[in-house]
Length: 203
Image (cartoon, rainbow, N blue to C red):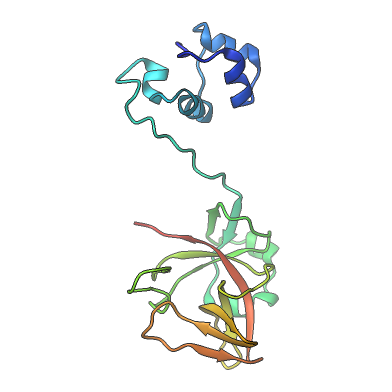
């Protein structure tokens, strides 16, 4: 394998692997695989296929970016379950046939997933939007602050709702992204269940 104009020591330092392994690659003994191949192609600013197989142009499709690392998986629960999240035994839930969503969010082990219903959080005027059908990753151990999107339960309801928390001069509101829905003032009649850390969408 050709190593462009970069010394083995530099590749070793940037990839975080042994110098002897890099030396073998440089001398055509063995090849990097998987993530190392992508990382090396990015470092050398060349195409992975060209690097590994000598095919195509070395400079074609060089804008390579590694995706974020997976941090865990969260069980998909219902909005009624979310409304009663303190009563849920997460360990028992993990032992059932529940659907789990892998995520890249920095959340606690008690995080759970919900599938968004309705269009109250779909913005039709630009800005943030969480469309119906999206899956959200919610952390019940994160502090809810002004501007955060939260999952909350009103006293008169069994199931949770998804809204943006607005705090203005001591007053608190649950605000939808869709302007056709009303903003709801809250004053002790609401329990904040968790903070949304990630939105997963299928296209």
